[in-house]
View (cartoon, rainbow, N blue to C red):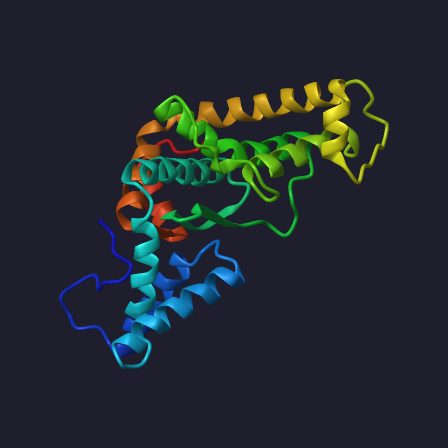
Length: 256
């Protein structure tokens, strides 16, 4: 089992290495937070230090983070861990972006951070793979639990919003519509178009179903790796990209 915040052996580490490990752990823990979230985090940590009549310490910040994690029921956190592991596994299997870190169990759920290539996918199949990666969290939950939490939708920037936006672009501006591929139909209000154009909505939903099936198939072939990654994430709370790749490398056939 890996631990990012402890030395790998019994030798005493240097203060500089300890600080580097602490900063790395803190950066992973804060993944996905907004500026306001971080400001509130520091404010609460300073309150701990002030009550103890001493300077702010790294562990004060971790205490606040652990308090946030503790507010999430264990069964919900486990489902979030499976969700984020699903994202990470499908991203790794398809190879369209490099997983940088994964976190689970904060008050706002979890997060999977990836580094996109300088040139994004330039084919219809490539964009469908991107959509599959965004729907992979839902696919993982459904595969393991038979249903999914509602946290992957509901807001701009959510998994469902990003997946739907990409599917709309394939049908309206990227020349991939089966019916009218040569038409360029830009829109400032794609949600409005989907609400009132039932034909467009049906075509977009069909793409989302195909992408979800793609993600589900990959996860089904590598369910052991999915659960292995989810368990480690649920135990550790934060994993960096190298740790994710090491865990997935234990599966001899992790490619899609």
